[in-house]
Image 1 (cartoon, one colour):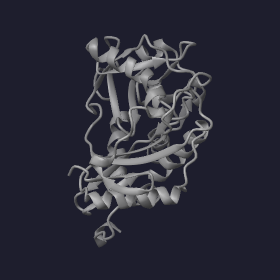
Image 2 (tube, one colour):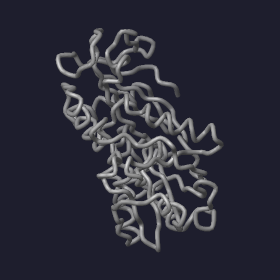
Image 3 (cartoon, rainbow, N blue to C red):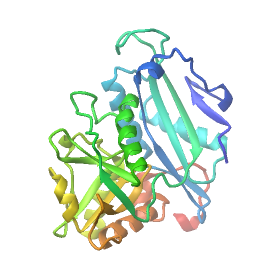
Length: 313
């Protein structure tokens, strides 16, 4: 069901009223930050679960701090507003929630201080962002933004021009997704996803210092791999050619979920099929996000609707 309402500057309003001026600072200069939160519909429970919404809002507030944006809400209040918005829209399918905090003055001048802040949340029906059945990737000619240029730890609106350049380059050259390198030539992440490799049987991912967004799905994967598969993830620098020798590769993120990679730069990854570790983590992830694993549901899944069948408890 398409959303009928959104939340904007302290009130729930019809979606058609959710507009900003063309002179808005955040529109002109990219001076905003955002989050993407998925909600997963569980047909058996007749329940919509918001996955790790708390952690997303904690990260949003950290991004706001970087951009000198002040929001008048706590994490708890943001969770309450979000649940209420989804209820108002009566959405009972997989959805994507987009909170955006941005500089709102209609002024000319590049800066962060002395400008008023605004906030909105939208919710939309949402399926797969990228295929989860095997991606063909290329190493992008566009390098990942550096922490001393636009902080990669913050989800800064303007920073996604970097991602858009890499994504379009990949798609227009016949690939499904891009893999970006740092300026030092180390593997960083996809255009909008973290990356994991299996090398010599070991699960490896770029370290936080490789200009990655500290992904919530990335953290989820690392915990599931440790608790369910008995595999510790190594965080380290990864060279480009290690992509060509990996037994398995997968991308992950709120949008991408768990998306195995079967080819990089025309070279098959492993056998060219989805590997066993990638498949096991993907299966686990889709059970967890839909609230089908009780040991994770209470901690990671926020139910939207009040009544849940006894079978789900």
